Image (cartoon, rainbow, N blue to C red; front, top):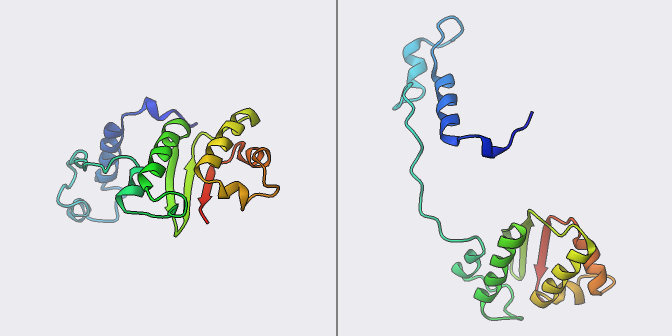
Length: 161
């Protein structure tokens, strides 16, 4: 059975699992008690609690501008503009930047368009964002054909010539 992650407290789960992993069972353990507890030094059997979090560097889309990526330089010289659009896709489609190349951008999409009507709207955005995807990388080179390929597609790729 797979339950919803919303039903679980991650800190409580880790603490419970820690207790199970560090419990000494003299009947089944192949290590002496002192060695068994030494495995998890410096904590031993005492759950240390959650590691403190680090401050995050904003949204994934922001990394495009933060690292100075210039992939779409033949289209726009301002990667901040590209990041602004990708931010909107993060919010609306669960987009995650998973890679960049010299002139390419790869996104993982958690909630892609599920109907052709939805895909037409997304295709229009893609065309405005990166017309080369349709002009040079799509056969036939039409918005309609491109939209058909977007239905249910969990990865989007862009390249600028």
